[in-house]
Image 1 (spheres, protein in one colour):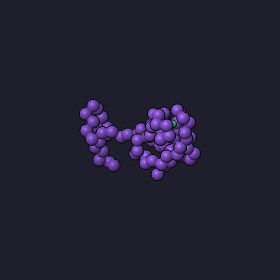
Image 2 (cartoon, protein in one colour; image 1 turned 135 degrees about the vertical axis):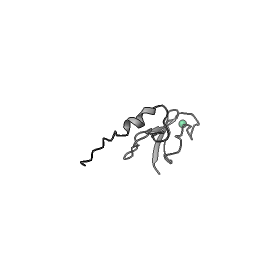
Image 3 (cartoon, helix red, strand yellow; image 1 turned 60 degrees about the vertical axis):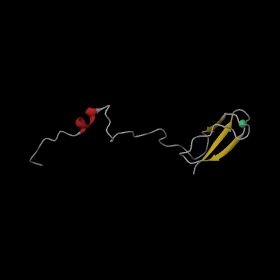
Image 4 (cartoon, protein in one colour; image 1 turned 120 degrees about the vertical axis):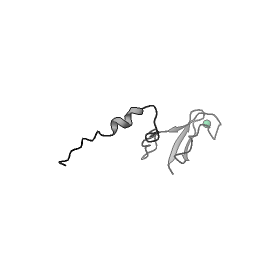
Length: 82
Ligand SMILES: [Zn+2]
C-alpha cells in the first residue's frame, strides 16, 4: 500500500498517510479540521503511473464513433499467392 505525504495549509501539519490507491484523497486535516489537507507529490521513489488513464468503452459499443470499427477492420484483399 503506498504512503502519501499530506500537508495541511492551515496549520502546517505534515503527515504520511497510508492509503489504498483506490481510496479518495483526504481533504480534511486530522489536526485542525480544516479542509486544507492535501496530498504532496514529494514522496520519494513513488510516482503515480497512468493516473487518469482510462480505457472507456473501447470495446463496449462506442456509439459515438460508429465508423471506427469498420474502418479499422482491414480490407482483406484476397491474395491466393500467399
Ligand atoms: Zn491542519
